[in-house]
Length: 51
Image (tube, rainbow, N blue to C red; front, top):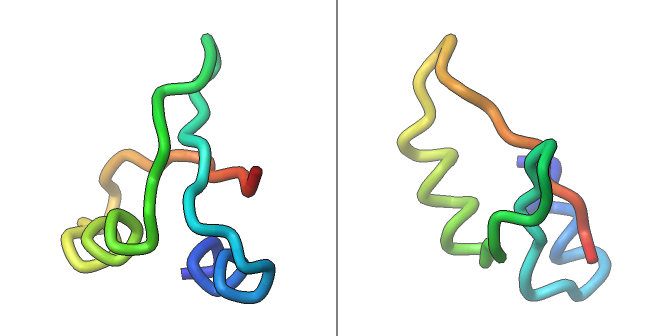
């Protein structure tokens, strides 16, 4: 949720999805909302960086 709030605060429309070996792709606000809605406790997480 923090990444989504930061997106709106900075006027960012897409975020880079980062893995240890490089960039995986871009995420939009709707992608983040869908991820939040389907999040499972103890499930995998990813690091989101604003670009």
